[in-house]
Amino acid sequence: MKVLLVEDELKLGEYIKKGLTEAGFIVDHQLTGLDGYHALMTEEFSVILMDVMLPDVSGFELVRNYRAAGKHTPVLFLTAKDDLSDKIKGIEIGGDDYLTKPFAFAELIVRMKSLLRRANQADYQSTIMQIADLKMDIGKRTVHRGDKPIKLTAKEFSLLQFLLERRGEVLPRSIIASQVWDMNFENDTNVIDVAIRRLRIKIDDDHDAKLIHTVRGMGYRLEAVDTALDSKPSHEAGNV
Image 1 (cartoon, rainbow, N blue to C red):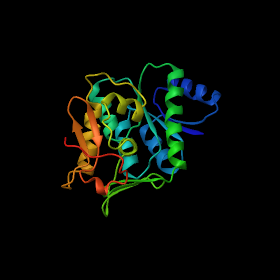
Image 2 (cartoon, one colour):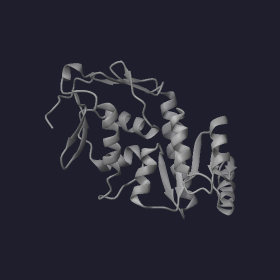
Image 3 (cartoon, rainbow, N blue to C red):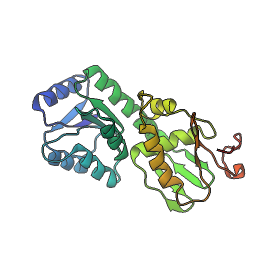
Image 4 (cartoon, rainbow, N blue to C red):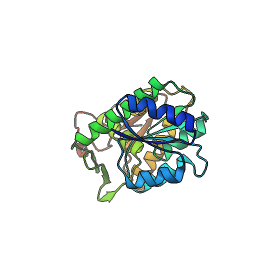
């Protein structure tokens, strides 16, 4: 599998490249944001390792533009910044995971394999999931509400897919964090709330019938008010 590593610290980049090569990956190491972006847009990769603080352009900006171009390859941010605001920003612009420097190489491998596993599962699925007038085609990576297409980031797509798979259930923030981000968030972190809010804007804001509901003190639930429209009739909608 081919990995793009965009990391301006030469010594760290060489260390990561050497370890990944020994683990069986093919690694393209770029030292600048512009070179990394050129590689992003002209080549295909299985996973992207993106430093945030590059000398010429922010890794966040590169990934934002990459997602805007309709690209869905998993992105793992490598960053020395561990502020909550940076974590939220990384999620908002389409990052799939992040790893704070310094990190253990074994943890990097585990996180990469997790991203690859989820991406490969999506590649082989062609399931169409639906609730009310919201339809997701997992194979084609498309989402529609009625006849209107909805553009989602890779992380928003994964979040909505998880909500659809567990529709009708009340999902605590901790479960969403572990299943969608494959990590544990601190109890006082509002990363999940931010991600849900952004997804809700795209899914519900232009519609009278709301599908994403907050269950106070417990978590979130995806459910149609009119269960007759729900393709999973075993769940009955409740008031929120």
